[in-house]
Amino acid sequence: MDFSTYVTGLTMGLTLIVAIGAQNAFVLRQGLRGEHVAAVVLTCAVSDAILITVGVTAFRQIAAILPALEPAMRYAGAAFLFWYGAKSLKSALGPANALVAASGTAASLGSILATCLALTWLNPHVYLDTVVLLGTISTQFPGSETSFWAGAVTASFLFFFSLGYGARWLRPIFANPQSWRVLEGVIALTMWLIAIKLLTDG
Image 1: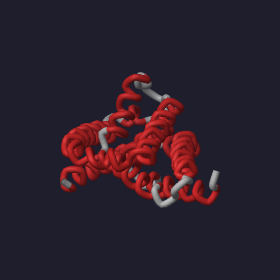
Image 2 (image 1 turned 90 degrees about the vertical axis):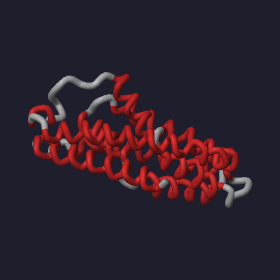
Image 3 (image 1 turned 30 degrees about the horizontal axis):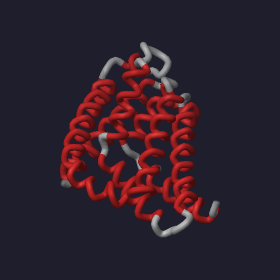
Image 4 (image 1 turned 180 degrees about the vertical axis):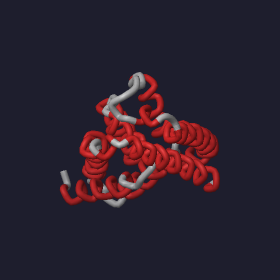
């Protein structure tokens, strides 16, 4: 393995993934609530790994068909994000006791995974970052694409596990219901801003 290329893949992967987005906001929320954290971070990391693999191995072919799929994905993704944002806003404005991490009925694993997969796979920007951008960069390292791929995949696993399980350190702050109101409000705003960006990018 080419270690310098691995580090480049790791650095590029972290640079792209650290930005606050719909997926990251969802992982943070689940980490704070302590609900199905392992399943959520694994789903996000494995999804990224699949997309990065496709980008490194066949980005030219995927980039060619992406323009045909992009409009449908963009509108579907925007619709889902508007809905999820409204759901978060409703939580922010709802009864305070419903916002406490340890209270209430935990959502089912199936519904959590469905939401996680939708936030991941319905966002065209995910494909542009992982498939097109990382795939393009990987071609700068002929013969060392595997090292670049390994670094980028490591970045995804490292980030999502750190975000999901590191959120527990913030739980004392979110013991205050008002903190949950702020978080849900920020998540709602984030979802809507991303949805608007999806609709105006076209």
